[in-house]
Length: 53
Image (cartoon, rainbow, N blue to C red; front, side, top):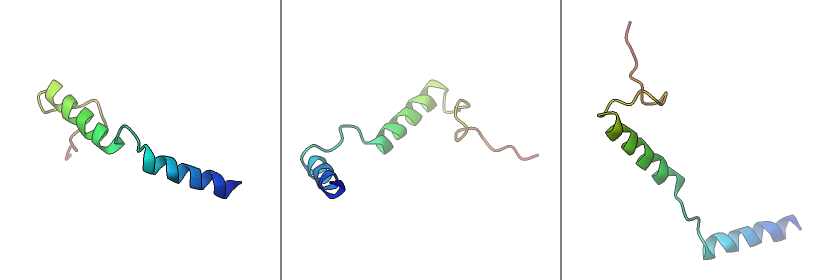
């Protein structure tokens, strides 16, 4: 039964790929956040500058 489910998932993925590319969505959100904060986003940990101290 597990093999059947896996094959079904593969067939569905070929016929109807996911509607949203999550990597592209993340890039768009980050780009939007940077525009909203004039290029300096401090909301996300990954956007905050590393302070040398």
